[in-house]
Length: 159
Ligand code: SF4
Image (cartoon, rainbow, N blue to C red; front, side, top):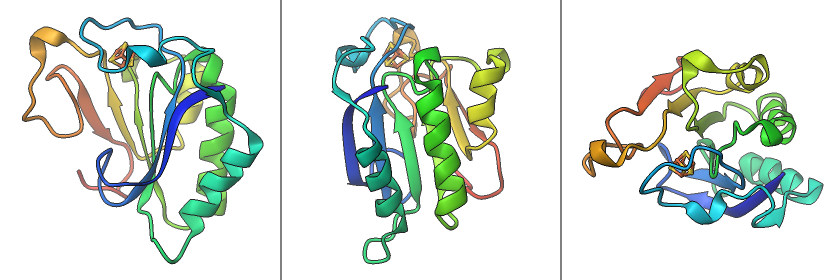
């Protein structure tokens, strides 16, 4: 997997102070996409074991307490990203105490493949659906257009 940017402290993408990873690769081609430079799978930088370890260490950091991890892009549920994302979210849930995971995807929750669902089974908040320019609403929280939905999948995070 490749990624575009990693923020080790972020207060914009999700609730609370967070770590946020923007991965590379998206096949949705939404009109008006804010992040077209992430569409190509080979754009950005290689997501290394060292960065994976760094994200875990950041989430375990007791000096700057993060509420959890946010995964955006690009699309973390792009089929080519699933192995790396599944490995990362599995580590977060097994090695980091009480951290929630938010994930933004252009795929719809009701139409996920079994491999995509395996990732979603480990996260807490899913924001799904393509960005629809005609439904753009800047007053919306955590999403760009009104067709996109916020699914709280566990009771860990009230949105
Ligand atoms: S799903 Fe997100 S990153 Fe992908 S094209 Fe749509 S707005 Fe852009």
